[in-house]
Image (cartoon, rainbow, N blue to C red; front, side):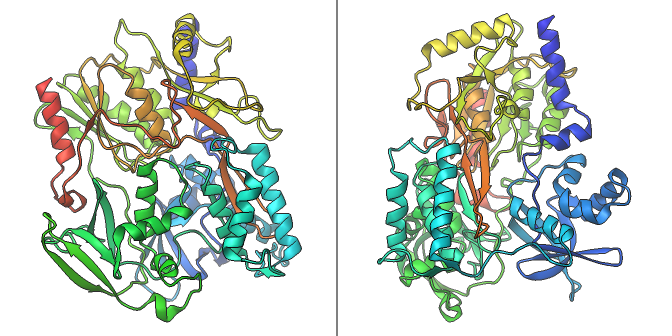
Length: 603
């Protein structure tokens, strides 16, 4: 009886009415700096320029507007500005911290695409203030901060971290000393009489990155790490310690005969990567490297370091630079002259492949992001894979989302005679801002909860008996919580008894780390590719009062059942396979997928 009740509850989570799904969205946010209406046409401001919005991620703006009209009659303008995330959730799409915008400049006819636009609470608050306080708009971020204001901002920053930040004591770092050191990195004589907010963003960013929280971030409404023209007109990716350069349209390598990067503007590429690391969370080596490589897209960043300062001289930033490339065997090199571009090259999701049945009678399930579509794909494709000889689940490049797809797939992997298993242990920082069910949207409950079934209780007792966390969390945390993977009772669910290979890489993060770390415990699951980045946070946000700087930090310390933290480690693979340079271009060689097929056939 209890199991039936639990199954119904899980079904409710998966197939809740649209209004319930909308409430699951973690924040009220917006990617727009400002919104205006010309008669019935909406125009949005992004980066100081006005556009007609066409689509947000994969959702057409016309669909969003129509949903606003239906859901909130007579409140179109208010709801589009203030409840954009809820409207998109009602349409079945929940954006992440950044979005891709398809826009048409007001004075042009050609559409453009802007990738990686921050989707923040601060922007939504600004829009709400613009509407509620017209004709007097909400206060915008100041151009300068007085010394007293900076001191108050730092005090607010430290107070919030001490109240909410789960990893404040993880590495034995003294917060006050770290702030003082970073201040003196920028201002050798201490705080000046006034400071531009961008300097405070950089100081606090470098401080927060030292604690190892992969989700942590510091940003303002007009500044975010890695933003700002110009950019490299190509993309970079890593293969076993070597950087591959390829065309941003993924139609070819930058130079097919010389795929690897040796130096950037005369500096060894590894030195350039090292220069980026202070601005990146000191997490796993693969997380740091993955993010540093992407940060190199922004020429303004590596040239500021290269030129010894954080000035923004357009003549310096836009001058051409040399890119030294090497052959596959490293015996030959070639140098090409590169002209910086105003367009930020987007990585988007890769590999760009679809779920399908492979010729070898092996199922291939591609999960691009851990969202509602991933859950739908699990239930759509698993019945089609019922009679296959094996299953490949490809989550490469999947930056996370929710845990619903994990619960859905785990329900298929439990055989008739198999018991549920624990996929995650966690605690959260006690704070007056957090409810007792703070981890409920992570599908976690206290291990002493009376809601567990007897079988789940036995599973937890066995797992906790051998659980030895690598970090002994200090006082001030909740009791231990557990994520238990069990059958869901979904009508499409059946026991899939064949071998499963899951493909991973450094692009896997957050909910995808949990996906990998939980499923790799199953005896029929093999992880292949390269290790994930590592991160599991239950992030919280707070805004500093004067500068309106937004800070994001982890409230949860999250562990694998083997005791390892997700942050700082990631999830290692059982069989390491690195891609070929051609993997990053359309029609290239996917050695990792080929290795997975070979492995399943051999089993």
